[in-house]
Length: 76
Image (cartoon, rainbow, N blue to C red; front, side):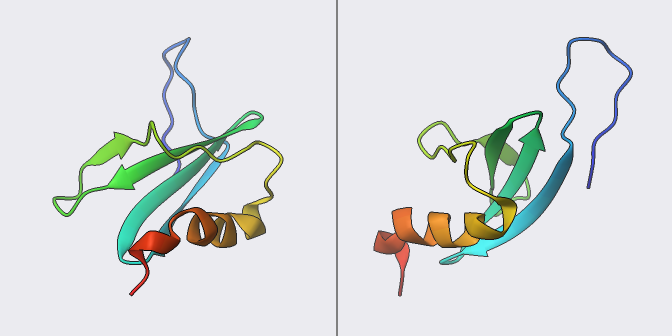
């Protein structure tokens, strides 16, 4: 889902998608040259992930593997 707004100064994602990694739900948004990661809580609320950063050089198709590598302690 792409959020659109007409307010200046608010970042709008170029694209976004949801992922489930080891039972944790995330929304990944691409804004200009950066990836932003949002954690989707069980209540459906979004919170920006401050402790998990996705480097800008990671390609979209590599994000799931990258998150699996850094979140392996949550694996079953």
